[in-house]
Length: 545
Ligand code: ADP
Image (cartoon, rainbow, N blue to C red; front, side, top):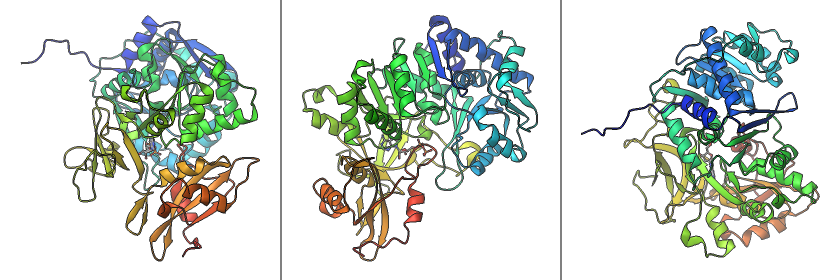
């Protein structure tokens, strides 16, 4: 017997419609590409999203057509989130930090019909345009006065385009399972693969993102969006914020420490999420400005994910900012929230130090997400906090395959998605990531966690950033090599650093050597680019070899 409840589809248009109706004047603030701060609100965003929908129809964009964006976090990108998906087209957020050849590949693969771009990317667009086979219109996201003088076919001005179209539009009642947005993984190995979200997955994911034990987003929240909108839909925050009418604060291309600090200070920011490298940039700025009292701001939650958080980062945020540091784990394929790292009631009385140890883990599954770990023999491993294996995940906002079937069947025989991460799950459900399967170091048949070693190294006061990679070793097959960037004005020797590590990790994990470098390479999503490092140090001769 079926329940007698109304079968209303879960649609992205309902999010912005709700925000415009119940939170019409709640502010959307963006530091624009052009420079000045722009202020608008949900009512205006909704009207402009409808203009976007009408404009797309006039450009011949229909249901399921792909619309690309090459853009930072701004109010215009925000209204495209709703205007494009709400109309039934698919918003394809392209990561502008990818290599131009990769951008060319994914725009062609996605067959984007229209490409919206920030004017800062005009030279890139001009260079790529001859190779972009499907793009029929290029829309510069600016007003007439700032139009770039580039030679691309059918170049349009965003503000003119919106002005030409009406803000009267009825959002179509789509199938909730219809595709809504598309985001390619950075593809450190092989070609990038498209993750295709649906209206249903996006709305369900938003409910979870807002939940009290996730990022606790509500009408009184002011969110600083420091995760790019081209990276897993900025962790779903634009949709979640609209769902509850949270204030949105967007840094545009200005992701430096000073810009983030000023937005936090001036816009009453209470919640902000970013990858750890962004928090490092903020720390660097604050190091140069010891007069700043971060506790004087209204910050409540610093969210972090995408890479492991070192103890020192959690401690500094909680001590100096007076916030709760909340770690989450996920990936483009998981929309991305899979876990969040809130403490449990039984942890309340623990000493701060032990609480931080729990917060360093990658968190526990949120409702809707199933997690299991699988050994090399394909058997499921116990959740005892010790056994580690391949992390598999399932749920209504987890990918079931890639766009156009790239990579073929990806789910395991039971329908779970193999994440490529290796970790443990403890009896309380906290996941501890040991490594990416491809980054783990295999020394004498035993695994060494590069994540743990990097975290330990970053704990040293003179170390700004650290990467551990495997280097070939005649006896142990692989041994860890530490590449470290020193903090400006601070010094440490190889011997001191190795001594420091030997007091913190088991003896056989201590790296065989240290190389100090000026900087480390990062992926387009801000992670350490280990493939490049492994390549660069492939022939490195360890002193122990
Ligand atoms: P990419 O496109 O670079 O793969 P993703 O954001 O999809 O970007 O990357 C997901 C990966 O990031 C995860 O599989 C995991 O390895 C890593 N990751 C995410 N969150 C955490 C975390 N809290 N701690 C450690 N690693 C994390």
